[in-house]
Length: 197
Image (cartoon, rainbow, N blue to C red; front, side, top):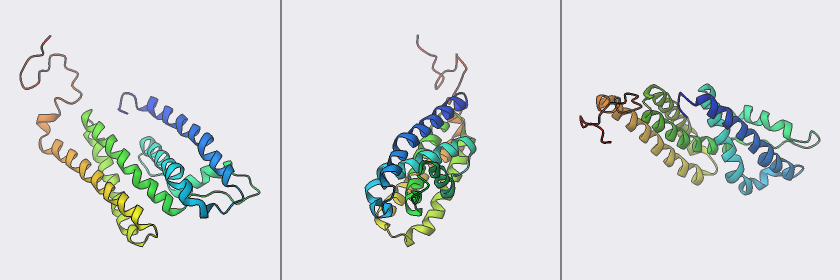
């Protein structure tokens, strides 16, 4: 996703998210209807719920620059549930685990934006990911499923460091990078060497 294709990519992402919601999440909701779904959490959380949270939060961030909260996600699931049974609701742990996966996608997005010369957007992503990491650092020690969260926190820290290093490198050595990034000048030469034809 870049400035030039942002709207097109977001439109496709929203359609894909709606399709995933209708095909997979709705099927999960129907299968778990009337059961003690919280007892079966480990069977469906990593493959469906955490990935859904990651996709939904990424889509919202790319569209608005804000975080999709747990209440908003659960509200989106309510129409999928039969009103006569207890609705499937994503719990806090699954939301946080999905949110921790989001940071990896944001890291890739930030590096891509730097490659396209959009340093300001990459720095915005960096601040956002750093804030998520900071907040989760406060919560992680109190979580029941500490092994899974601990592993994801380590990965999240790696994502934060990669984004910070990339942004820092471009800021410090920007004169070396920025002319090369996204240059539309046809006769621009790398290191003073003319293009070979």
